[in-house]
Image 1: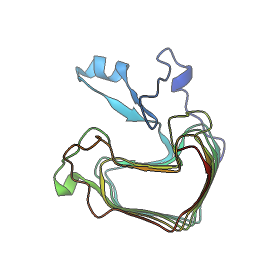
Image 2: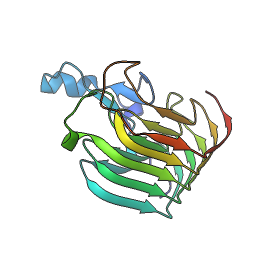
Image 3: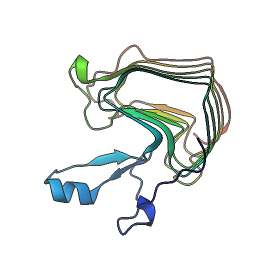
Image 4: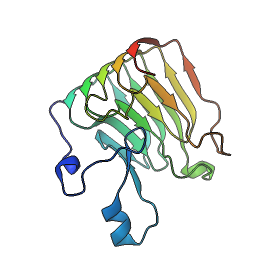
Length: 181
């Protein structure tokens, strides 16, 4: 997947990064009478509430948005042996930052990023990172090479110590080079 973009930053609403590529979608909240409406930078592949998805041996290059985004209760999502290069947002974004204690069936869980190459990430949206995972459980991030990121190679968790459903997450054997953390 190459040369995709995201036009919201050029719209009248602009883009103000709150953290990790999440922004307050004022127009959505205003029209839906929603008090908060946080959204992440969208992905070239957007997975919402899906189960049992494998993304393997894929290439993501020169994207004006994120690479893979999975949320809204997605489960058993695997990103394996992929290449991410020159990504404006997060290479991979899992989970949400608004609902820390969802019932098991609605949680983002059984997620993985393995054996992948990720470089030159968050080149336009500096608050993004290589791999970001919000409120997730049973996450595996392993055997990846991550280089040249603006806001950290791997960022997990949210809520700064609040009670949440995060459990059984593993980050092992990753090679990280030239990352601002």
